[in-house]
Image (cartoon, rainbow, N blue to C red; front, side, top):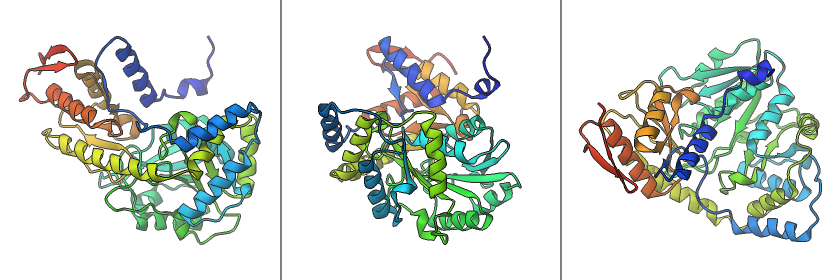
Length: 405
């Protein structure tokens, strides 16, 4: 069968692959613990459900405008002004089927073949693949000190004559790092000076801990005209626990939004009318669930970090946001893919290899599940890796014996 070279070059999503593997194992009756999940376990806000239900009951579910229904664009504009201090108009907003599709449509609209797009490492697994899919060149930049926080001098050193855009994701998936206000100010100034697109992937922006506050990139923008190349991507998936609704949006200058609308019109036509209505309900409804989720995640973070620090040799940088921890397991195995498979096979614990995020030797562990899953999951990992742990363990109703070194 003839498959395009582009399709052959695209790597499968490791997170989705692990989800599928875990689901198949559970179907076989195995007591799998999923520490690789990328979605909160809290329920969808009732305001979102009521809004979607009202749309369904109307039985008037047709095509919507390609760039989103007016009610949702209005809610996004208000949300952006309240949380970022940025005044935008409807012509600056395009709604898509999730923030992932927002990013892909955006890249299609700005990247020419061989254009380079820079992003700090560790990075979300889809950045390199999406950039390659629009025939651009992904450029991952790791800080020389080996920590999860980028430095402006490392970004500057990666720039070439082919640089078109820089993507910043803070709070960061997979590390949970929250980039400093100083760095955000520096990167905004740098991109304006160089006339680069700066894409702020803010899908986790309110999920920050320990008294930190979300940082608005617009606070440091000197170019407030409609020629600005500062772009904001967000959505309802993480903050409102609505991953299955697939609604995201982009805030950008008018010409770029127009280009994105043309691209989107030829791909998805428009986002779902029902799901957009749900997003309106979430954004306009009671917001107490957001703070409740944030507090739950902060507590879960503390439990996970505490448990991991009992595992000798594992190094942990305490996450400041999101619901991910990127732990260093190189003391046990420098091959993260091999280690993740080992833990799944032997301990029935799902983790995500750090190699996929530009952090080989690390595993991404999610703390958006239950406390029980977190503590039992780490306990199983410790049993599988630590030779000083008891040789026998019960997983579900079955006894397992550690017969390897």
